[in-house]
Length: 244
Image 1 (tube, rainbow, N blue to C red):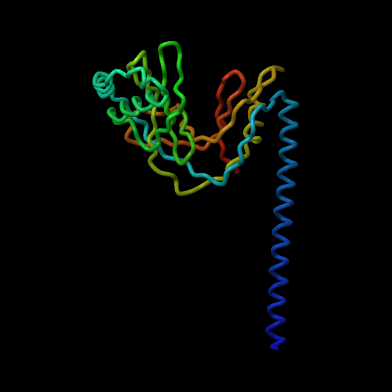
Image 2 (tube, rainbow, N blue to C red; image 1 turned 45 degrees about the vertical axis):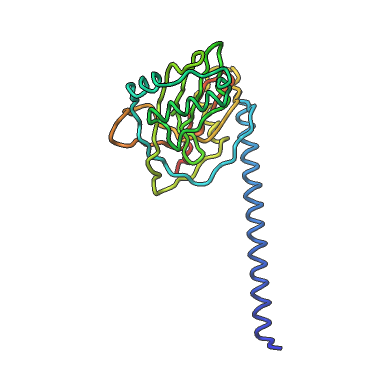
């Protein structure tokens, strides 16, 4: 038996084992530190009158900004699509029938693309129904992009649209803060002793309304942001990049 070779193999195995053990210890220590930080942040939020009634999403990895193109609305195309539609029968007034009719109208207007994600079931209010679409890139909503196709009785009567077409991602990525760190920033804006109850928080791409020009030949920037919704239905956006 070649003892020199055997000793080399044993030493290499021991080194590898030590590296694995060290990596596991560091990961456990990191998780423990993160757990301590989360507990501290939750305590700070509670003492400041901010309470969570929602599950917190996991913090993603690093993300890049998304360049988007604000789109103009083609009123003439909408009028033509509405005029050319066929009235829906009682059988096609189902959720699926309304969704299919809305899809057809958007296709006719040239509004349907891969970033349009339909929200089902449609919203109904008396004799009216609303089929809504979210503007989504790679599973993340682009705020505040939307399309709403409105139906009255058996016919579509209008299309409301605010849309950002994804162009490309920036080639550099930044670290994203945790949702708890985003919520901490609400303490500075909170007034009085009233409680603020958080009902929803999700990661989105957010196009700031300042400086956005519909139909501009220059793409706008959609930043990663935490979208926070409270029990009153108020929505706030907190920039999600970690400050250096």
